Image 1 (cartoon, rainbow, N blue to C red):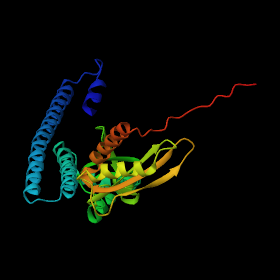
Image 2: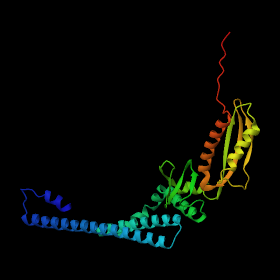
Image 3: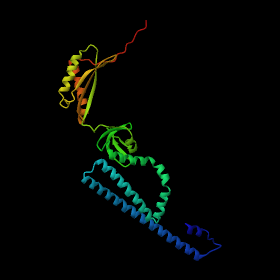
Image 4: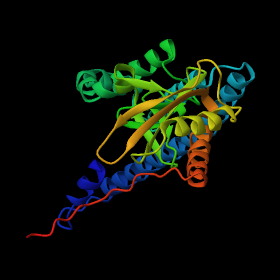
Length: 286
């Protein structure tokens, strides 16, 4: 650029062919060096990307072969990928002819500003380590936290990826997950299922109790210990509510809930047990 500016200062009134030739040769030389530096940078970048892909696959294969916990595996793979990417960026900068020592000094001088700007990410990184150490959840668990719920797919260095039941993907920050309330639905082997069934006033509670009891006894997925519980839950303006609670294996929770719901509805309909229907009384003005 300097040679080009000097070339522009040479006027027809002050010709200097030797000087012009020198500037042109310098310009060509600088251009060739710049082109070679760019070419080297592209070569380093291309080879680096290939190596990063191969190394990521190698690390993934090693971790899978050693049967590392999926939570640790996803976190470590994310960390390795980011580290290799940073090294590639530094290598490309060096290939372009920029002094890596100067680049490192620049990063060091900007360290405070970067630290402040990335304070959230740093807390997320520490949060990821806390999650891996204390294991409030692992890959494959269904959790509720920060107002969302989903199945844990990956624990990365900054975020945990959740897949919701309607197939949405949520990126939850590790810092908030490690310091907030988490409901884990997979840690314990059993869960309690509860139904609150409303019937109309005047129905025989003993008959209703017997019907619900038989439905529960006939379902082999219901556990005998703790024993199923059936009781009169309460009375509202429009219905008498009966509560039924049973314990099932965790994986049977929803199937038992929906199946017994249907069975109660079908059996009540056959036996003439009436469900309450909201009524509105309209008084005609006198």
